[in-house]
Amino acid sequence: MSGLISLTPEQFTQFQQFIYRHTGIWTVDGKVALLSNRIRRRLRDRGLDSFDDYYKLLTAGNAAGELEAFIDAITTNETHFFRTIEHFNWFAGPFLDEMIARATAGQRERSLRIWSAACSTGEEPYSLAICLAENAPRLAGWSLKIIGTDICESALATARTAIYGPKAIEHVSPERLAQNFIAQPAGNAWRLKPAVAGLCEFRRHNLLEPMEGTAFDCIVIRNVLIYFDRTSKPIALRHLINALRSGGSLVVGSTDGAHDFLDGLKRRSNFVYQKP
Image (cartoon, rainbow, N blue to C red; front, top):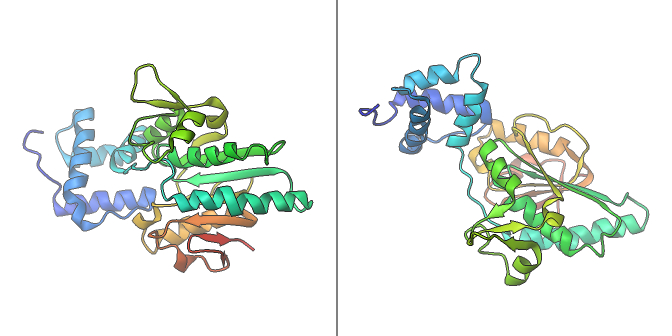
């Protein structure tokens, strides 16, 4: 493998289309070096000498485990707690206000199901959990559940530990840090308190596939649809909307280009859409 430099144009196209088929993510042509580097790591792990040999392994009928490892290797998982704070201010304020008012009026049950889609290493669902914990007096007696999903198993494994370093928590206020985290003995890391972490459950899920189970009151999908094209993006959004209960809210990122595919939802703000 010492002479392996970069994917050829033909090899890049092969992997580009393979990634698209399995994730809906379109790897733009300018990412040849980045994709080559990430695949090269898998070659080292598997003791292979060429990109072609690795592609043959990926497309073999019994390559499910390697497929997950490949997706882990090529996906980007960069996030932090309370990223885009106005989204969480809306969730803890107007959204919860409306849910509580409707429950008080007998118009809905006292329960909330939230889906953090493409949640990466868990900072987003745990930020939502902190918002719920901070509103515990108003939500006394409620059934609360946050489901975090991602296609990357290694990211989900990190999320399940609920342990984070300084970069992840750099936007967490000292008050929130003291209230919701426990400093770890080794230093330079913090673990979420069980009462907060216990509100979240993590599952592997591909956005190109339907989400099974009970519908959600709120679905958050941010900073991932930008990687989907005009064919795969509406498929993912259709699955998200189908998983949203009537009256539920969909929160999208401002750069995700989702707005053209949300016909039938009522726009409540520049990032919140409500299902009739």
